[in-house]
Image (cartoon, rainbow, N blue to C red; front, side, top):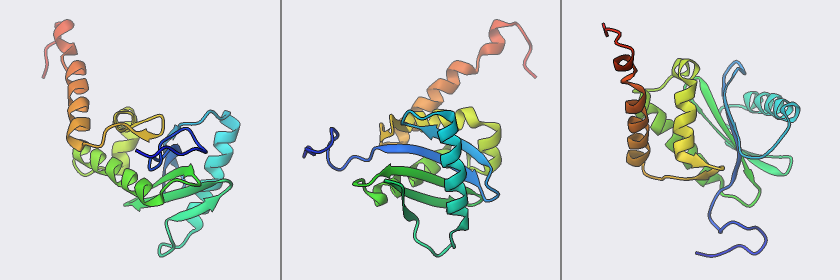
Length: 168
């Protein structure tokens, strides 16, 4: 593997700064920050990016330069998945990361929709955390990510046994 002399991470790895999921109406549904920022700065960035992405025409490119970052976004049904990456990172790899996250959500929820994210946001975050760690891909295998999620679900399921409550 080649090592980049300018940065401390290997060439070919994408270091995501943050991921935002928002609706066509501009409602933020999920946010994951991989860089330390104040809440005020996060809100300012979110507001600015949501407005910028929503103002773009559907046929326009899904990449844009913003500040000193590249923004990569993709719309799936009523949700926009928006990521910020460093200038030297690969936009196509980021699009693939977005797509893989959507595939994982689809597999888990069975054709994911915005309501699944709203009412099961903790699962959406958990799936993202199993897939990405510190803004970099942790696990490329969908099967392995889904297996980890299933195992976590099994740990949460049998609570009724401990309370002697009948299950209906």
